[in-house]
Length: 509
Image (cartoon, rainbow, N blue to C red; front, side):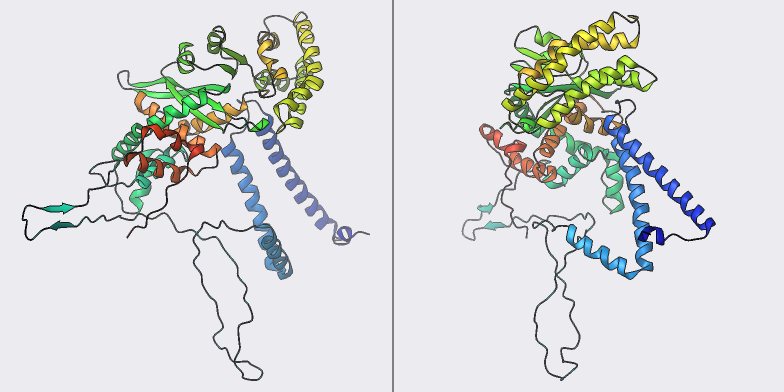
């Protein structure tokens, strides 16, 4: 008999209760797995939003922690075992964090045995993470005035340092905090004002808006240069999402567009660093991407939006379409009921993604060689098969529409086979669009076209910071301070997130 079986009670009622509890727990875990699957594989309209998924996982983890705490309280040996496991797996805290040392010493240093003096033979050191809640402080700047006793008209004083808001109260770090809270943490300005008021600092929302506008104007050249550098690449991802904008003249909102242009060569080891630039446009007409991408030559990875076709007709841009969008249409049909053709199409597309999973991170040449060997036969068989199925079904069905969507874009869908730098889908830029959607959900709309342009400017720099592992608050505070101090326009490349190096810190008296 195993130890687990020996631990089971002999009472049938107790066994029945344990069985019911285990079934309930299994059902809860199955639901979590289903939610994970929906998040990972579900189509956009049905996939669980990331914040809701994390909320569900938080609840499950809290219940698990409560169970551990209960077991540890009943059995000290379990508490000690889990403590040892935490010490072994938690890793070390970052070295850049300041350390506040506390010494816990014995009160009496006399030996309890011989009454001699005890000496230090070593020590145990442990570190815990502590948080000091966000605090406001006031930077007091004094500029002494000097006069000459012999020359009454002479007064000498150090010049006042330049400020982002002349005559205003914020430091560059304060403005950066407002920007990051709004565009990275998705806190509208009125909520920030409420948070500050709880600490006794009353800042009107319009005051915060004034700071954001001035910062966006100051950072606009950096945003423009970022987009110029991205356009110099030979491959970009492009996508767009709605940006509701207040339209005061009509008493409601209008639908603008935020176009996202991203570069990420990490999947094939490219040397160009990742970045994303957002550009606001009042509509979704084809002339918008044409205007944005003027001068760009190369491959543009996009979804099925027809507005990009005008670019391809100019022969300077070749379009690579997204297999994820093709797959999504067949998935919708397969989920709604028995659909053998859609299910078969999904299985064939899955073969392509299995290949991509195996070659991620390899060089462009290796990726191309493997695709030619493994993916091309799948593609060569899929096209005629789709064409054949199209002749067997009604042309008015959603299935026919999904097949025509794929076949009409076949050249762009197969472009990745011959170029190892091209991805199979445009998920890179779709991930870059997600923070915009989160901000839109919290802020509901931009106050004006100018506000939407501010949104694009600052979000571009913040998201590019994230892609390059740069802390956005430190970056924005430092870059704003540099520009205010007169950073040369000719050296603006030094201010781009991927080239950022912080200035040495100056002590504040």
